[in-house]
Image (cartoon, rainbow over all chains, first blue to last red; front, side, top):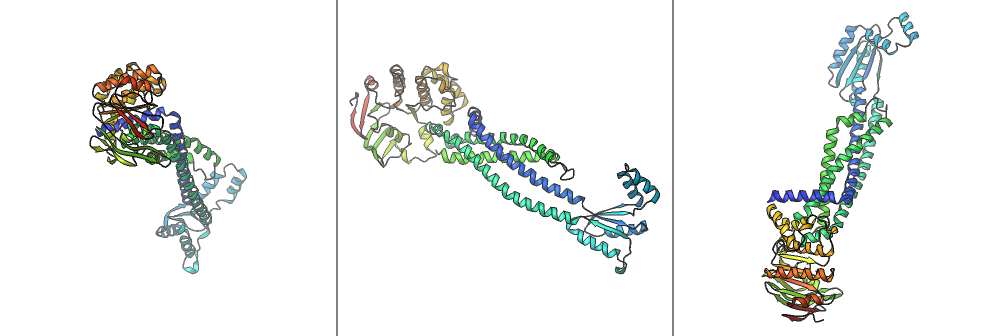
Length: 305
Length: 225
């Protein structure tokens, strides 16, 4: 009997959803807007995060060694650095590799190439160090400075140290602030759109109150009166989640084109495509929960048995 | 079967029913007549537990209708078929679905629904309108669908609130004929109306209400207002 009831309620809900045409459309549209907002916020927040991580991972300490520094000395230095717990990776590039890379970068500049031929190799070897966390760069930098000072027991091998910690710090602060601000705006937007969904579905059920009273009078129980409305709400949520996913696609392309180059090659479209399943699941589940809650709440208001 | 015991219904600005007491026996066909505002519809609402009396009690068999819990109310209502002046069909459902809904709500099986609904439509002469929506039907046809819905669960009691109010005389007479047949097979009927012709053609018990009070109760009455 339970299964028969569930099947009947599902069937009635489905048929009502179809026959209620415009009212169903209004619910779907309101929910699509809500899910689109939620999807955009999820996409934006996670994209900013991964963009920041991407930039962070590109930041490293770069040490240019003096041209007379021997490879053996540099390798010892590299080994010592690798032993620091804060260091994630060190990459050694020899003088010849540095020259080759420079030649590759400027192969179209004939004057530069000729000058290089005359001068020989002006480049020292290079060591790129990546920290586990950007906060560790200070400590690593201090270690390098101490090793480079002959008075501190170190050798004078290093020509130049460069690292872009300031940029990373600024960016981290910027992203943090924008995320905090974004969170407030997101919450307001999500609450507003949920409010619209609740009202649209309530209105749909309110317009059926006459019908509901008839159902009650012919002896329909609570589940039988409310069930189909809840099913309608869930169907609206499911359809809205598909629509929101479809709508996100052109929006993502538009944002990608508008921000091309800002994140140095990071692509919102790729992020959308890579996380398609996850975003869809979030919107799908949110759609169902929202439809369920909104219609359940509205039936409590207007479908008292 | 139905017993009104000193029932009063008082609204802030009016008295709908005042000290109403009467009994309806099983198998009876009772017409309740009175002018508009006499309290006829309020009386039927009391039977369906749509409205609560201010004082007094309404019994269905030995059950005090207004003491029935909310969860048990649907079960009670399934024992009562109801027909209204404005038909009250579910607008988005076909004739078949309107009637089937009542059966589904009562937990009847799919097989019963498939066999009983066409039969009920045949009784009211609308077998060919099985897939029509209410907006595709005339007033008389809608009322017949409503009657088919009301009798589908073989109720003990059928209440009809001004069922001929929106119909022309021919349709009204046909509807009353259907009620007579339903009564002949043992269903108790309580009908409210202010249609003199209908009451006189029935020659059954007539309870007359005026300003919320029972002023006449005649066994084989006529319309006397």
